Image (spheres, helix red, strand yellow):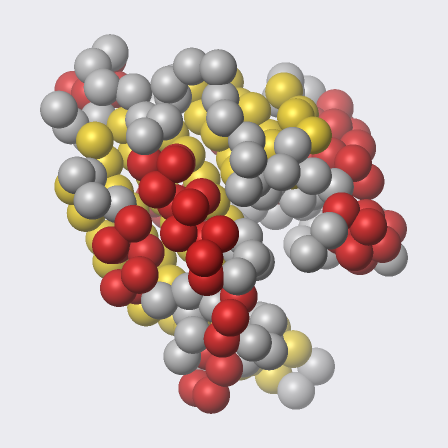
Amino acid sequence: MDPKFWDEMFSAKEYFWAGEPNEFVKTHTADLKPGDAIDLAAGEGRNAVWLASQGWRVKAVDFSQVGLDKGARLASDHGVTVEFVNADATTYQPSELVDLIVISYLQIPIAPQQVVLKHAGTWLRVGGTILVIVGGTILVIAHDESNLTQGYGGPPSAEISYTVERTVQAFDGLDIVIAEVAKRTVDTPAGPQVALDTLVVATRVE
């Protein structure tokens, strides 16, 4: 994968998801006390902008400048502040620990997937006020491998899909709060279809 592919894709239409956050991001972060967050592989910034509207201090990281520019416009339209960072998710390193990391549909091969997940697990802050609730939290949403044969949409390759087992293994030392294949309804011209996603929520509490 390279930035040119995603630059061209993000240039194809105004917003792919109408600027709305992913349903799992809304559900699983709504009750967290806002702090510092990273939206890794942020794309057009829909999740980052929603988190900022909830009071989070967000860094939206992506290697597509077209996506980041659209995210900046979306943030401006919503009257929120987001720091947009042009960087490759496989090599990015934050300057400080954070309270929340969102990794939403990062489509890369299995080997770099594991590298990114293991690195991200070390970026979580221990202590601070958010620790009173759940500690640092990492939320992973991705197209599950089972979606290839049993679900709708997503990439047509197992090599850039995820499994719950591999994702959990990458978070050695973290507390696993949720680890499941989650169903997501997709509206299509032929009617509602069900997509199958890897959904893992993990926390660092000590």
